[in-house]
Image (tube, rainbow, N blue to C red; front, side, top):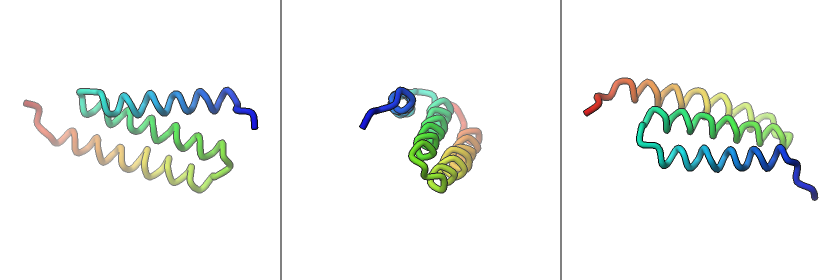
Length: 79
């Protein structure tokens, strides 16, 4: 089964976003990297013809959870 170049790019983007999420010192940038990771995973689901999983990943994980993280981060105090 041949692997498309788009799939390779998506996998590399997912790995880079996952590493950035863990390694970034700024919590806000880590939350944004996590949102991008969720969006990349949603695109992978759409490539696999799994529209329901893609919509769920995009709306709940990339949208709702990221909005929750950003709002909680904005309520915390910097030291």
